[in-house]
Length: 340
Image (cartoon, rainbow, N blue to C red; front, side, top):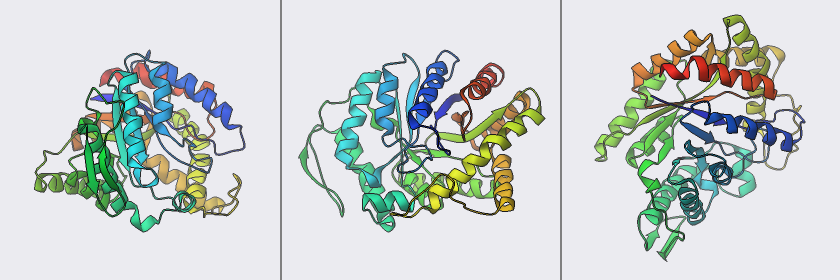
């Protein structure tokens, strides 16, 4: 199984964003020498929850700082973009990286992001479907036309032309049955986060595979994406998780409850102390926390249960300082990654 690293650039407090980017790039520079197979960037806007407005732009920069590691998006939220521009950016990344792209697409679910972009959230699924068809067609064909509800393309040629067929390895992110069906219908690989409710995840993956087969596709590869805290003792791993997953959980809640036009301060309350503590405990239980052996067993359990082909671990999150993130990353790379 391949093992990649996420690059979330979270800033749940009032730290300057430039400092968050500087530390994240220091971590990213270590990913290739430490043996990670891939490096993944998310897309979010307007809040401190991973403010990466253009994952493809960030990965194009990383293409020039690396030689071997693959570069993935988790994800490009297509409903917020013109698919022609996305296809152009994918083509540039394909050329600059020498074909090291792994492009994931998703629908997004943040009201503040949809609102500020002036896109109706109810249109997200159809815009995503059309966007995937357009980006794929623009990369596959030198001259491409398309007529849909939201996109009308007539004899469009994307330049520069990609040379390594990035469209052959597209991923669809799925946290719901609807998204799993869309990924299957489009013949995409699947990017997902296993839930602590394994029956739900079992159903999600079964829906994806069944839908793909009905659409005439062989079910694709599965990549799981989770947060990681690894330490020499379980006590230390849990202590780090509690310290930095709690501000991340609060940041997530602020981001997904924010509304367009309101002031979204980093200290905006989103629940009682008891509710936040309970949400953090639930989050820790879902993700990968423990000794190297415990982390391996949890990830390997998902590999055996679902047939994973790749695992992507987020090793820096919340307001985790660079030294602790580096320690977390290095121990995972030295004690867990080689076992896969």
